[in-house]
Length: 204
Image (tube, rainbow, N blue to C red; front, side, top):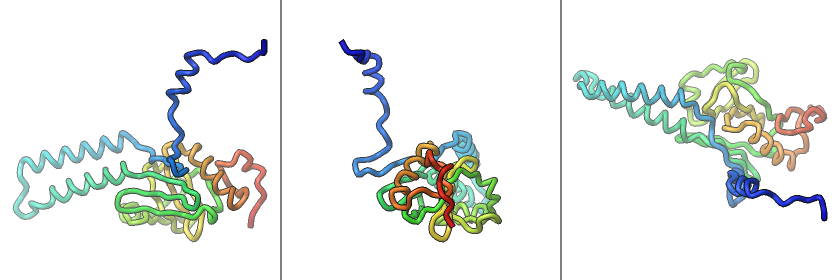
């Protein structure tokens, strides 16, 4: 008899119930943005306060203000929760309600882990709520940001302006993005998704 063993029923059940890879029928890699329950809780708490204020009646001068704030909060929460990312054969897409961005895979030059605190961006609400989430950093200049987590994300350098994103599983997302980018460009000088990135040649 050979040394092979028949998998146990427990192992078979575990394999059958394992989650499918985040790839759809068209071969596109899908990922949602990281969600902070603290941020969601703050949105809900403030919305409840606004609704309580509405129940008491607003002043005649600004009767519309609580309604505007309530709608803005709900839209902000929906926009936050709708943030997702997709990698197809040509583009990396970063999408959310009322905005989005995309970069060509063959134009990507760097994939690295960063924090918005490290970039020291300035733009505030205007930048983060713009159509493309335009921000500015003293280190890299202008960049786009489609994110839900400011502390742990990926900076994708491509084209004229980098893109900051925060997929739920950043390492797995970086590995898949790196694999698809390398099919176009070979190894990059900075690529956290490439297991051999330390051996990547320097590119000018």
